[in-house]
Length: 126
Ligand SMILES: [Zn+2]
Ligand SMILES: [Zn+2]
Image (cartoon, rainbow, N blue to C red; front, side, top):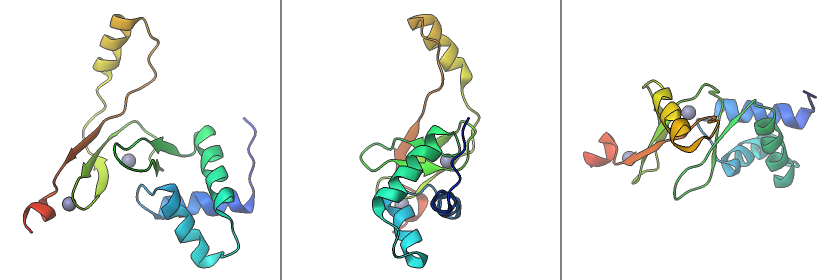
């Protein structure tokens, strides 16, 4: 795999690591604080190439923008529908489901993603 290590790519990866499951917009907003001349296109392009090269995971989030994850191991997420809190879920990946779906469909399964939705403790207590 060819690695394109430019300064911009490093900036984008570092910003994604410092933020918690950021959207592309949030990565861009963080970088321009220190590098005001970087373009949105450059940030988005680097996010895509980092995802293609497996250095970031892109998570599809229902009803909102995709997010980027620096935890590369398969895991699930939970989202608060009130405040938007988005975090990792500490339960093990259910590989049995992949096997079942594979048997059912004949697919060679790669993975599945789950984002649980609900109202977080803080929002319930408000
Ligand atoms: Zn909440
Ligand atoms: Zn995560």
